[in-house]
Image 1 (spheres, rainbow, N blue to C red):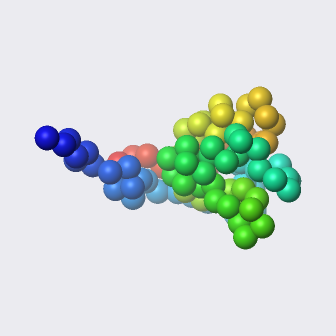
Image 2 (cartoon, rainbow, N blue to C red):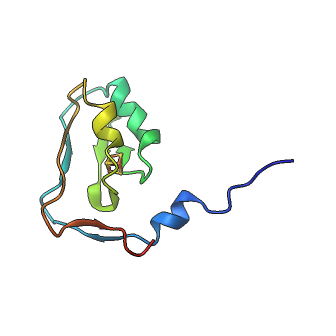
Length: 98
Ligand code: SF4
């Protein structure tokens, strides 16, 4: 007997709304040529899938769908691979829909 989840993460994320602070990303990936193990971990660990590999094999972030969970902040804390802060007041994720 297999147990299937009744609700997928992607379905729940759909109900969130975001007010994007254009041009002021609240999380930044430090420039690098080869990603650290911590950055590579973020490709799978971010629940909103904000981290991606570009065509040069570097890790990039798009914060538009960030749910401010702090996972990347914890994982990359020791490596210094990212700069993390909350969005400015009024911007970012709105959870009241889901
Ligand atoms: S705070 Fe959470 S949702 Fe936002 S980029 Fe980091 S891991 Fe992804």
